[in-house]
Image (cartoon, rainbow, N blue to C red; front, top):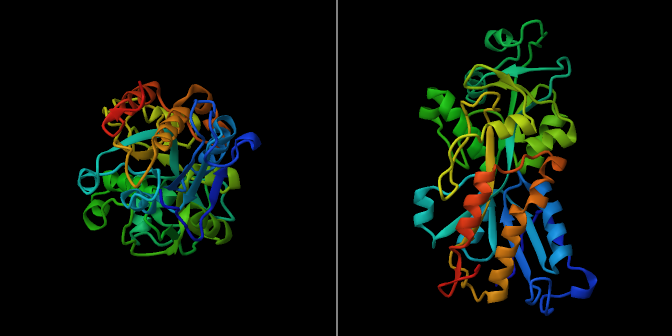
Length: 356
């Protein structure tokens, strides 16, 4: 496996326990040599992955490094076969999957894209999907626009220019956000559409969720879309958003989980934005780790393939799913875990199933 050097990354390493140092140690807890694994991709779940990969390393003796470079970069690295897994908040499209060897999507947790804002004079903010779309399309330019005021009765809104902040890198967070906007605004759908990269017509660009969060936190009268954990942890104000039922919903573990109450396909690739479920936060999402279905590539050993699946099973375990709320995410619904475990049994090494 080629080493991957990723500049400007927050690389988080789950170190093996002292007795298991190195990647050739025999007889870890799974009866195989300890190995090193690398992944790259989404920044949205980075706090959860940091915590979980550290725990996995301490338990297993394996070493996991992960670079938060955005979902698009992670998928490119997997396509180039220089990582063991990619992290992405956007499932691969049919066209993207045709460009790669077969892959398996393993959801790891749920989260939300929140609308973070910086209004020194305002403590609370309500927004609707069409208003958010028109802000980022440049059609609503002032905070005291009549359409924003109509959603915020009794709230004093400043007559200030709105400064929109968006992602500069290929981003699953951008995909989730624009997927939602495309469902609630025909104008957005027709002019800009949904994708990991979108040509935003107004505003400032920033790299990664931390970059957008940083600009919003430091720039009065700004607004941006970020992973919920970044707003919760940094105490950046975020808006309640009107859902498909007309309810104004604040993002929370409960409202995120409510969005996943519908059916899920066998391959787990699905969007839950603009859910019609009662109490659902409308910009909720899954985030995935993506691995190759055939694990013998780029000189990878059987032990490395086994370790990759051990890590996937660890992420799906009850003990890890129960920790999601401690870093402001939501656990997977039981159906997602069940389907993912079934899909892992289809993963092979030299054509032979790895899990028995």
